[in-house]
Amino acid sequence: MRKYYTRACNFCYGETARNLILNNKALPLNSRQNIAFDQIEIFQRKQNQVVESKFCSITEIKNLDKEILLEIEKDIKNITLERKSILGLKFDKPQIIGVLNITPDSFSDGGLFFEETKAYEQAKLMVDSGATIIDIGGESTRPGSKTVDEKEEWKRVKNIIVKCKKNFPKMLLSLDTRKSYVMSKGIQNGVDIINDVSGLNFDDKSFDLINSKNIPFILHHMQGIPETMQNNPIYDDVLLDIFDFFEEKINYCLKHNYKKELIVLDPGIGFGKNLDHNLRLISKISIFHSLGCPILIGTSRKRFIEHIVTKFDTSDRTGGTLASVLHGLSQGVQLFRVHNVKEINQGILVFEKIINTN
Image 1 (cartoon, rainbow, N blue to C red):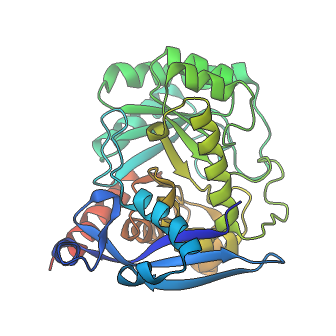
Image 2 (cartoon, one colour; image 1 turned 90 degrees about the horizontal axis):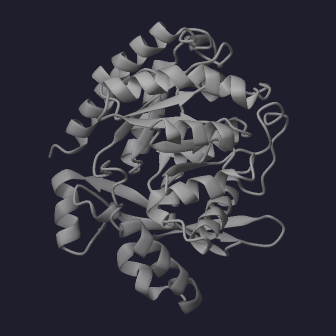
């Protein structure tokens, strides 16, 4: 567990960012010249679970105490470091991951795409709407859901994986599963990325498999298991606790010769978090840039939106999803996992045009 943590903040964009970087008044995020930050927020863990934070401009960092400075400089190196592409996927622009649930009981679209023809039509729609990755899952991990037998899970997703791989050869396929058996079958049939909501904690064989195959994976945080994860989740500080979880997992991967540039971080909005936890993570999501990996956020149709808007809730929650996506985009988040690809892509394109216009 760390004592100090660094969050890039006070972002600027477009020509403003380029000018501030040129004049050494701001630093580039991930070596990008069109998004920069001129402040950091420094968090410090104190005794009795107390967390303090303070803001510091980048021109004042050199005046910090030596103990703090050494930690902060390491973090800033990671924050400003270019993110290497994964399977040709570049992170100098936002990437959209389309959700395809082949389940009868997922929280928002359970059963809609359980039939193969409908699943393929939805995949094609997402591809045509601007998704660069399709994330296929055969087991619901909504709050309260129970584990599906691994063979049944693979049976659900097999045909659509094969069909998508054949018809969309340039599209990257992600497989949303917690089980090494399903991962192995998926990799044999052309899956490019593994998305394990358990953070590789569910199945002891999972890490050895992805390591041996050199497969990129999404390191997702979840407290507990889907069946019970929303039963009063508790953290010392959700932001820093998840940061520690990520850092520990990354170090484990590096120790076992797995390449860091193959890891994508997902803090797991709604997975063992209450409303306050989710809002703190979304609000301060740029802290995870300090770990040196691309960041993914999955807020699409999540229940925290209903908790905020109450009587204005809608079945697809597109407005709430888009609001959280655009905030993430303003903080330099690189990947967005969503259901309504076309609408979210439209929002991203317009928002990017606005913030990059001077």
